[in-house]
Length: 94
Image 1 (cartoon, rainbow, N blue to C red):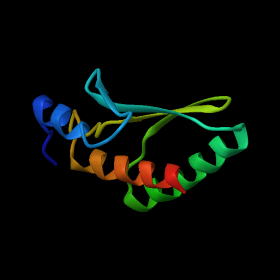
Image 2: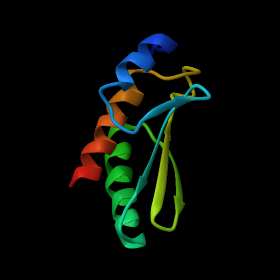
Image 3: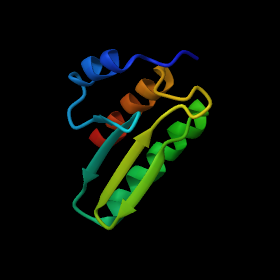
């Protein structure tokens, strides 16, 4: 899978509130009302990521969770990362 050029990534992120492009990865931090809601989001994203066979890095800090997306085998951000970004945002809306 082809790596998306930096300028295109930055442009596409204008349509995705809260997401940033840093150190060659897509990153977003969510803050939820409770730790258990964070765990619920992790479980929802984990199920979707497993089905897509593309897994984010997830860092939990009490009521906050940070998702980091990159396609390691491609060496950068690919369409798979933008597809997972959409799944994460959808899961966070539920």
